[in-house]
Length: 227
Image 1 (cartoon, rainbow, N blue to C red):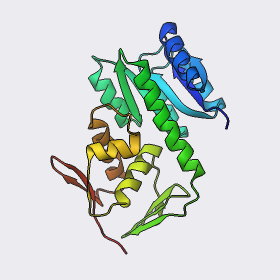
Image 2 (cartoon, rainbow, N blue to C red; image 1 turned 60 degrees about the vertical axis):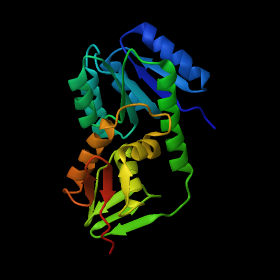
Image 3 (cartoon, rainbow, N blue to C red; image 1 turned 180 degrees about the horizontal axis):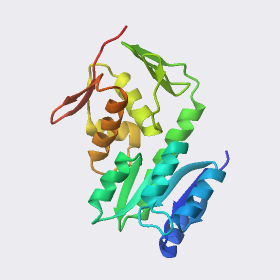
Image 4 (tube, rainbow, N blue to C red; image 1 turned 60 degrees about the horizontal axis):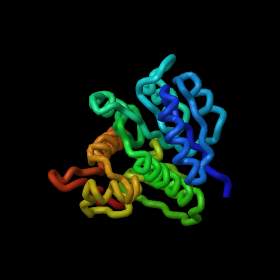
């Protein structure tokens, strides 16, 4: 199996070098970019599995790069933010980042996040199951990685698709935020549960506010309205 390609985008050479060393020990092919322009160039020419993207970048900010990439790709993106950049962290998630880590971060934790993302990518491409879920006005074809509301094809990121898939696979069942973190982001995920809330909010908007119910203090439930 060919080594997955990972892009590390940070204007600090020491951070790029440290992350690259850890990821290469895991067998990944690692590329570096020190500014937003270079990051977009690599993202458009390389078949990347994961992008590790710092918010504070020269030439183009990480948020600008994220906005551009989300118009072009659903590649898994991990944002890097400083501890004081709480607003930027939430903005990044709202703009389509899949995950985030705050600086200073543990390289081992970052590697665990990348490993989990790559495992999901591998399992998705190797699956031969022809699973189709049909609900009132909503249809998901897992093997085709497509969701339709009425007759309209929804534009979902990979994380949004996987979150919705887990919920649709357990209709009427309350899924806690922790369960969703484990099933969608992986068992190595140590971040707070707000990342679930943000992505659920994105899905709800695309579904027109239907199907997903909040169970306050617990988690979320997919309303069982089968055709």
